[in-house]
Amino acid sequence: MPNEGTKPWLLTLAGLAVPGLGHLLQGRWVRALILGGAVLSLFGLGIWLGGNIFVISSSEEGTSYLLQYPPAFADLGNGIAYIFCAITGVGSSPDLAKLYTYEFGQRFILVSGLLNFLAALDCFDIAVKRKS
Amino acid sequence: MIHFGMMLLFALVVAIVFGLVGRDTTGERLKYGAKVFAEFTAVGIALSWILYFFPL
Image 1 (cartoon, rainbow over the protein chains, first blue to last red):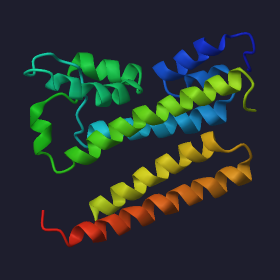
Image 2: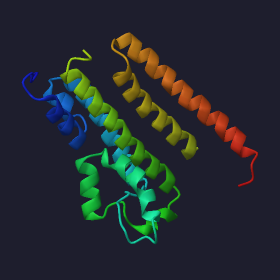
Image 3: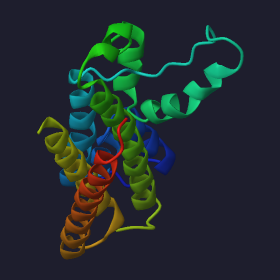
Image 4: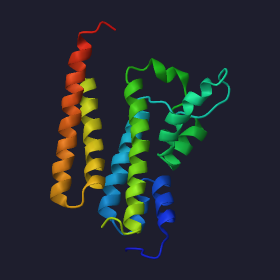
């Protein structure tokens, strides 16, 4: 059911929070299913492979903690899934780095967040009728 | 083998999202998605052969 009255920024925020939700609220369920499925499966696979979640912590010496901002921003694109993992500690164990698949997992999580930013922008463009 | 499989999976998911977001018609999306997938795979293989000769 297309929802024409919803404000574009609300749809974008919904898409950022839950991958695919913005498109779903626009009534574009096929697009929502494909984009949401792609982002969430990449994120889930990243966690399963042992990728770590970047969170900002000032416990590092000097200004080296600033290096955590770009990957944490990319991870934040996963929305609620990222926040859930950051709170519960999933993907935060230092032992994960011993895993053979650690690097794959980390990249998968980063890229799924960035892809969701693209998906949210797409949702916004559709809502303001820049795209069909 | 797992490296290659993961790279293909990664390229597939990125190609799906890029294709869907970057083009407007179904035909264009399929063509663009296939192009992105092929490019990711080709560049991945080329880089892996280049790095093969560097003892890291």
